[in-house]
Length: 268
Image (cartoon, rainbow, N blue to C red; front, side):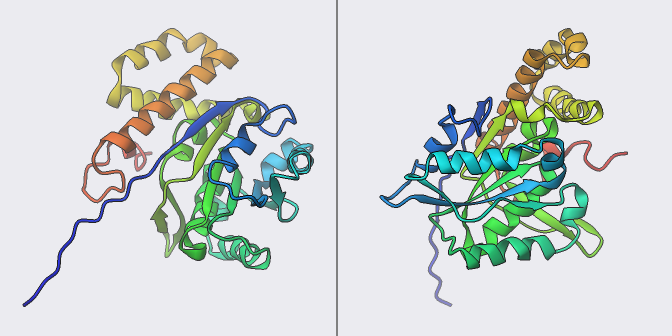
């Protein structure tokens, strides 16, 4: 039997930025990210916002609209930001994925356009699936808004929704075009949700970096008081360790059985 065999190699550039006030008129980061591979035409974007975040920060949707209006020559917001429910409920059906993809079709979002997700990890998972499967892959920018998504899930390369009673049964591996961690977006988080991201940082420190674990221990009182500098350092270092694993493990799409970053995910 004849056989033709070739090795196909595809490289990805994975970017995680850290900033304050990403939608502030004085902050050019998002504009610069969206212009990294821009033609002469204004870059089109569809924005999806976590409903609970929009309720906690009522100015946010208007801030997003103002940002795009302020850069109208270079950026084009194709419609008002879609405000969709976040949390695990958003992943429990294909409904919201289909809703986003209908907007992709309606507003002529193509593979050179962007879908921007602003919210917690569950919303990012769902929007990421919509982006990865529309046109076989629309550029996706994540703006995580919880400590857990900023230091863990938001910087990863997975997306998905739940189906058939199984978590993340439908999904893909699709590195986002960029991740932007805006520390100011954490301001409205309840204390419990701020602490939730600490656990992931402790776990990855135990697995990968004893010095980081000692650093967390020394900063415990500041972290308990939600000291901004301590929180930001924890998020940065945890995100960096996750990125290092994805980039350097030799198995970023988990083809094998070694999944150290999933330790603890299935224990209660």
